[in-house]
Length: 369
Image 1 (cartoon, rainbow, N blue to C red):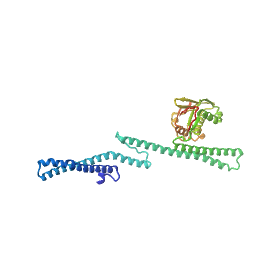
Image 2 (spheres, rainbow, N blue to C red):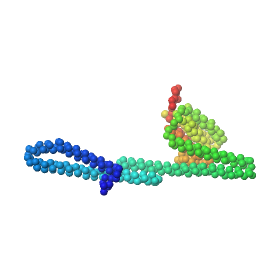
Image 3 (tube, rainbow, N blue to C red):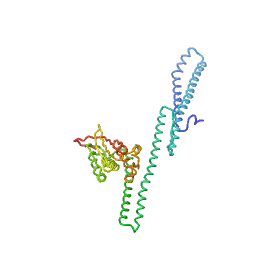
Image 4 (spheres, one colour):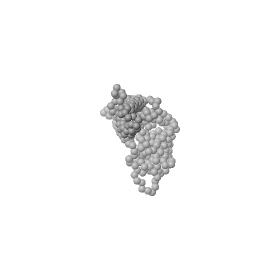
């Protein structure tokens, strides 16, 4: 009965009840003192004129005191009732939210809260549901990530193991032996690349800003990316057209170069032989726009939605040429650089990627990091 009225120990309800009782007690004390000082004596003076009998005077004071006591008791009862109603209105949703939070802590990300209220409780409910949804999606992504990593690593390891056993055959020709060794080396490099990309992506995901900033010539970096990938685009006889103006960006030179090489590598990979890739830069207000366009195989709308998904491969015929982590890394680098990235594509017609970065002006001044 006591806990039902006053609430559990260290609960908000009990704190509210104790608070109101302290207030009532203080009000009672101050009211009594004030009554005695300012009212009791004044009444005694006035009443003495008309009432000479002390017993009658005490009776009058007794009536007044009883009236005050009744008022105070009513104040306590009414205040307690108000506190009870307020507690239920406030603590009821909080208790339900606590139960829901326990379920989330146990791994249940399907739990949702519902309310018809239009106050702060509704905002809290909406935020809770949004949080649980995000946690559920993160849990799913982590599970998919682990499954994909296991699959991606298992495949080359099985390949290495199989061809290593074949090398034990003494009847192998020199050509066959060399072919198997080349496959083992290629699969080993694939594992190294996968491990490197996983570590790099993990590091970028836990990084909230670019710490190593320097003045980067974007046009020069794009030309460097074209030169680095020259063997690939020359092999497919792809025409590279560049329209580059000199703009500067305060960022991590190494990470930005990885962005351009990754995007250009994808453009080459998904371009037809004797295709064309156009790279251009332009200034738009205080931002730099970098655009890379190819006339390759393009993507379907449903494929376009998944391009940043880890390990996702648009064209399965090229699945052995990458880990499917490249665009996730690119997107994270661009985000950390305070820029944006956007893909537009149409199946059979090609893909265009547009990146915007905040500009810094190149002047004859000392640039301070």
